[in-house]
Image 1 (tube, rainbow over the protein chains, first blue to last red):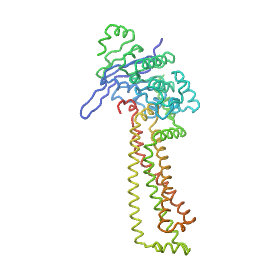
Image 2: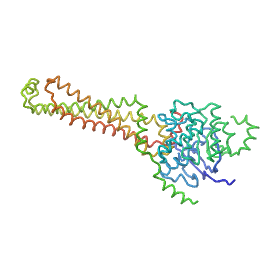
Image 3: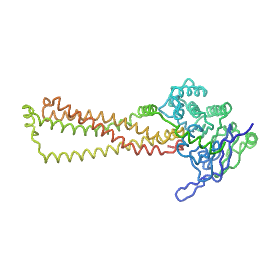
Image 4: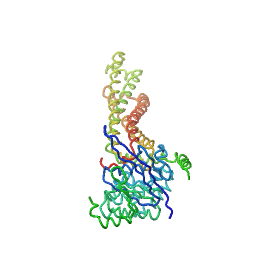
Length: 246
Length: 229
């Protein structure tokens, strides 16, 4: 199978200033992620994992270096182009679900389609379809506070898929869920990857996520510590799994 | 595919992130419905100021109208109340004081509404961040908050205007005699005072919302990821 690059970062640097102190959050990160991959970004807090993740998603700009999504350097984009990118190319999933509280499941899923210029009827039909796909076909008219955490996250996945994005960015998608529900969410993401060829990029602490990943990118001290493919990972988890828990 | 070509495709698409007006109105309505308690406070502020303004305008307007009447009974009533002749000096002083009071209450109201709007914006950091992640432009956020304040302003000041007008009638009726408050004078005062006060109240609310709305619009999409409040 021919691998097509979907995300590529080139020598990313990010420097913050906290008062007089200079914080080097990223220190030369070069990574390529291919279309249809399931990639997990792992790393302790403070490692630069979140900064890296936000840059891939066009949520933060690098101090120097480039981020390419489908060959477009997104650090050069203006506000309209960035909005368009967020709307059409990237689907976001959050740890805290982030559904709009005053809207029903169906309205939440329709919203990105409305932004993308779809008619109200069309958007509603597609939202119903997407919600059915994540197993919530009977919850269309429920508001987020009437849904469990797992159900809310499934609505969020349907919303992320609304405009058929190339990439789904999931920030700790299982962080606020119990073990079983978290596993269900991972299963849905894996299914999307397999059926639709969506690239899935997650930032996570969750070791359950590892088994589903095609590759794991370990970030430490603002740099890529190592990148492991799934087969390497299986051996590692089998042998020194206990030690990894530190 | 070249970089150039992709870029062009993107640029051509720049205007394609949209939020139709109908949808904006629906979103505002939903959010207002869900924040009734908070909004009640703003309503109250706006209503009080508008009521004050209408009361003042209508009171003076009706009195001025009554003074011009030829009706013997009305003139007798005005005479008895001591307001038949217009003392220019006292009247100017009175008006100055009223203007000060009105200005002060408008300022207080402005501060109150701005503050409440700020709380509403800060409360919704996650919602705003999420909307931006879904592709919303800054202008969508500004628009949502402006529509919201326009609605609050119109409803609040309308309620206030009606109450203020009734208050003016009550004051005049007690000072003079309810019988002398007749159709023509009331209607003229109503037409003069109520629309201008509603306009002023609405304007005040919308002005108060501009700054908070802009602050909200400038929130970054990454705020949606914040876990702590």
